[in-house]
Image (cartoon, rainbow, N blue to C red; front, side):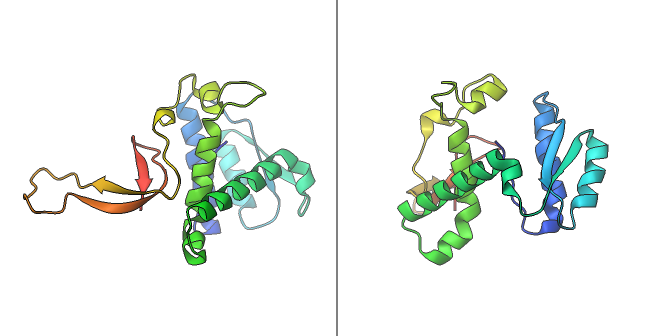
Length: 178
């Protein structure tokens, strides 16, 4: 599955557009997008559906049973993210700050994990190739040192900085540290 986060509700449409465009670059077409019919994003999402040629389905408000698979997956990712944040030993303000990174990391790990149903990771099923991240998994919350990539370094200059691993980079190889 795909995860996307926006700081404001008004950014939702652009988040959805970015995901659909990334699917299009993999030669995948989106036929349906399902969401609840509440909120200020109904009209912009309907317009986006017309522009990007997908059908927008609406569920009734406060009826998670209409989309049980997605609701279960959201709940599962949230539980995994909380477990990762607690295992890393973060205090509550830090957990509040990093929850989206933890959910995104949990989603990435789920995509590269084989299941008993298919035996093949979802990433491989969708793209037809193995994940580049799999051989280099690092525990969420692990302390590490990130090299400062500078051509000219003095002998006694700082060559790295201490950081915490909070996920896997989407647009280049390596981990995401903060």
